Length: 401
Image (cartoon, rainbow, N blue to C red):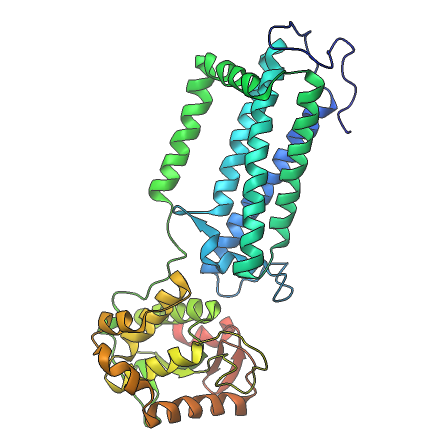
């Protein structure tokens, strides 16, 4: 079972009142330590990956392999954040707590067996949470993260391992031995003050001050940047006579489009006299885009028409920001609510998006993308050169000169 050699004096079964012999710390203890450290390392990696997915325009994780196996898709999901912290950060704290309890068991002598009941309960909770996350990935995100799956496996291994150790220790009924474990953990004030309170303080500080970098927002200075519509009817913002012109082909349900768009908006705010950003619609919706052969980003075509209608009313950038924000938060959009939010008449939305000029503009943008050979979003024309997914850093050098 991977538990190593256990001292002959350890009873196979006992009740809570029975005196256990002093316990050695052979392979089973170090195996548990190794599993916890491995799981913690995985959680830290996932926390870093979550940050980079949202902030680094060129980042792609090693397991972004396909639509079904893609760590980045999981990180981009709203389900990757729980109560103001990334799930991976919660995982790191959970394993840190497990580690603190495991280290505490070293000094408990005979009562170590009760602490293993506590660790067994923790392992049950971690495994149940793993099952919940796996169900979310299956039925909501529809994509899996390899590192997450590895972590789920470690949690199940910890569950089995702690159950075996607890059984060999003969810790007695689970509920009673769990209470004994809690009693022994709290009985040492030095451990309480030296481990539990700092741990709780660190978690509290994280909850209070962890930056919500996943809530990408345009700079509040964007409203001060010149904007308008060019002769082709495309909305633009930035310089009237730019040294760098970027045309984005984007989809409002595309995470990378959203991330890149707000990154470009920040560049425009910082260099308003050098960059002009032009927006064109390329929804990856099979209802409107012939390059898409199966249902994908369903409804993104309607969102594009809503933005075009807002543009005809002089509200394109306000609607653009609202659509990116709301689609990221909930995955669905209340059209009447978003119309009121940007100052449009909600009762006119239905007829507005059926306006022939709206449909003609959408078809024109999609046709332009097809002629360029664009098969996915985002895509960019940087001074006439096509880039897919992101923008090469060399293309932006002229801005910083």
